Length: 302
Length: 114
Image (cartoon, rainbow over all chains, first blue to last red; front, side, top):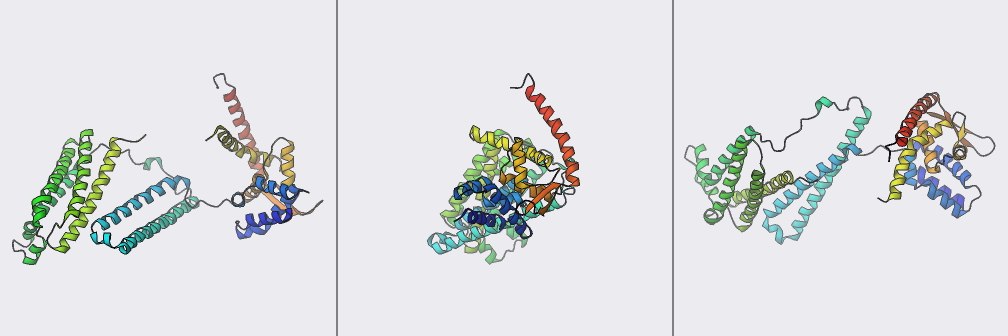
């Protein structure tokens, strides 16, 4: 190979990465400049010259800097959103696997679930990339309209502040939910004016073993969670003790819920049993996430 | 990051703006890439080929330079020269550079500078 051949290869490698309209002109100029720089140099000198000049993709980017797909200012948010969605997808898959014991004995179904999660994750990352690219494009196109306004900055949120109204609403919801859980058939009968059809009553009958052993354990943890919620509403602020109590209760509750789901039937009727197990598995994940959030606030990093 | 790598990174950042000003300062009259590099090097401003030649194109794309192909004593070469906008910007940049240079010199020559 002659030095001219090497230069020709280099010029081609650089210009094929440029927009079509620039290629011929940049190629002619680059070829002439490199030939002049090299003079009567041999192949080794040509290699040294090209190494100094830089890798073809880098040089092409210097000639025609491409617009960023995701702007630097958006990169952290991009990864945060993708991370949260990946976590949710992972949790949903985990819950699905937990509530479907038959997956353990069916490697093909487990693999299909695994692939489905990856496929959805790729769709999410792809969609987010497009959305963030469009945001950057709009920002570059209308810099004056997409600028930020100091007055629009959100207020600094006190992480220890408890929204009393919201917490009271949650409290009422949880107490009502607990009553429904403890007396499902009786609560539902209220809507039928005390005359609940027999199939509905049968569908909401607890498994006797659950009612005698696992149910009461779970009730203890539900009541503990309600008490901490009431305490938070009363204080109007999260304290260290309250957060500790919530972390312990949440982690223990998640363990108990997973144990309950795995240990045996909750309802006698198969359909009701599957739905409630799925709901419990989701609650277990929510409890763990909440425990993680509380722990992060209790022991902030950095 | 090693001290040497760190130094080269900061030097690169320092030089980035200065290279543009240096290039504009030499383009009052038409020059082609190689002759411009030689002219800058002769005045103590070494600019790598891979930095200078793409920079000329970018400055032209921004409307600061105009260029044309010419055949003089040798093969065809692309000659660059300041455009009217480029001349106006150059004058403003020189003013900014002088102010900045004076301020930074005062800062680094101050008694309490490390």
